[in-house]
Image (cartoon, rainbow, N blue to C red; front, side, top):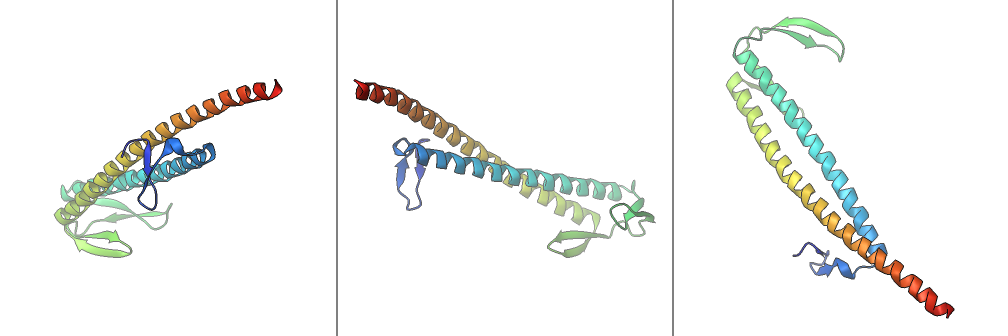
Amino acid sequence: MSATELPASNQQQIRIEDLSLPQLSSLRDQFNSDIAKLTQLYSQLRNAISTFSECNNCVEAIASKSLNKVLVPLTNSLYVRGELVQPDNLIVDVGTGYYLEKNCSQAQKFYSNKIEYLSQNADKLAKTIEEKQTNLQVLADILATKAAALQKSQPASEASSKA
């Protein structure tokens, strides 16, 4: 499939050069919407990667025995001092309200695997966004060409109708 052809819902290929200006404008709006949504998802993935990296760094600090005293959050702005009695037994949030007890090496492996998985998905998503942006640019070029051609043909038709 060339950059100027997009698949239709019935698996037929439609040349975008054959679409009307309103259809092209609608397609452009759809591309802009898709790119915005994908960019938001990409940002969320990057935030999740950052969160898991921070968790992994904390586990490394606990494993190296450099982190023994901690502040335990009671609310978003209220903390109490605490001390890790069993620093090798961690409770890990594995998602959707489930928690597992893991030792430091298991927790590090869990977070490293999460980071790797999310990074791979973020890379795939970045490529998809790039492809959509390239297709959007091709679409914008075709839209501009058609609009310019329409503007050129209108004064010529108006001049011939006045004569």
